Length: 274
Image (cartoon, rainbow, N blue to C red; front, side, top):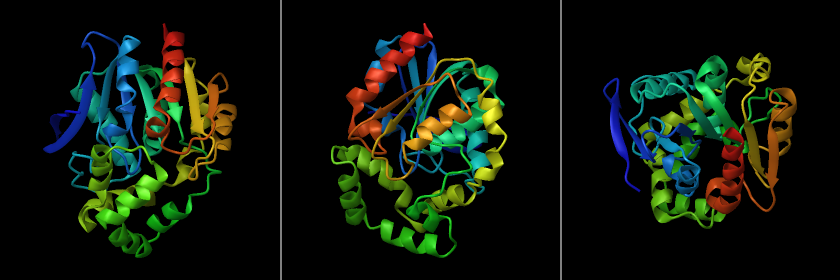
């Protein structure tokens, strides 16, 4: 799947764009350790609903170059502003997953006038969330750097990811691996997780509550990183009018594991946006 490139502050940003330029835009923000290819099975469905899709490789992931400065949560939020401005995206629908949700939902709360609808999966802004074991290692100085050396082993990375996502394509797998290739490239993940202070978002449930737009929340029943209970917590605490769907026999990487089921809810969501 061919990517386009643009330059922001002298750094290359790779992104996938599909659909009619005149159709309403949909911005898709991936998580860790992903790239825009996590969405590849969703593009045709979104386009068939009458929308244009734009999915960047976040800086440091996939084929996008990292920031010159630390890759913090706040810096990725600024990237969303820079990227949407560069593509003249004023109002758009937002689809987020994993860290794309922490970045995108926080950005949406601070720019509510830009958001037409929200489609959220496997992510949380809850201060009650306890980081999963690998995240805790990444957040710990020295321990994080040590485990990154092991994760740079190409064969081992492929083996572990295929256990987690058996139907992942080789091309997508290679895209996901790129952030682990070197100690320099993997700093992006360490910076991001170490900046992830969820106390920063204590006030954001109140901001989420102000959204009166269509909201869909989907989750894998067997997500080992963020339990599906956080889908209901997101609804109850911040988005009471959201439609919540828990997909059985699915884990964290829904978009690759069960794309047909995700597309069913995508179609339903955009029908509600008309």
